[in-house]
Image: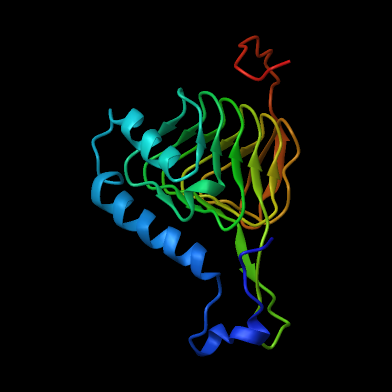
Length: 197
């Protein structure tokens, strides 16, 4: 069941709600807790930040890292697999699922945005779609990843690049809009993590 309300019924452009009451209350409590005792904590406090996100429904591996200043819109929509990392100041606008596979890295100031609007709808209806960042992929500093994007295994999105389309595995992208620059050298990843078959 979607937690996004129909704009034609609630009229959010004139102050009506966009999300269910339950969703808004969960995010209110989360915001108070995260801003109060999580977001600003010192760099070494990864375990504490993981615990807070888990307490609000996030699926966070014990080896994942969440750096200070990370913003998580709705923690129960966040999954960080083993050894994945959210760098300082990353914005996880998690209106839908955001999944980082093992060893995926999202660098400082990057924006993972699961939501947008139907610009042809007179009510400006909000929609959301999941984002998945593949194993060994890297989203570089201040890059933007839009709704529904799948970043393939080993792909790289360069600094300040913008993508609204999925990225092919083991390919390096840059620019706005992001364009492929070249194929990345595929390395053999012999590291095994929980969940590998």
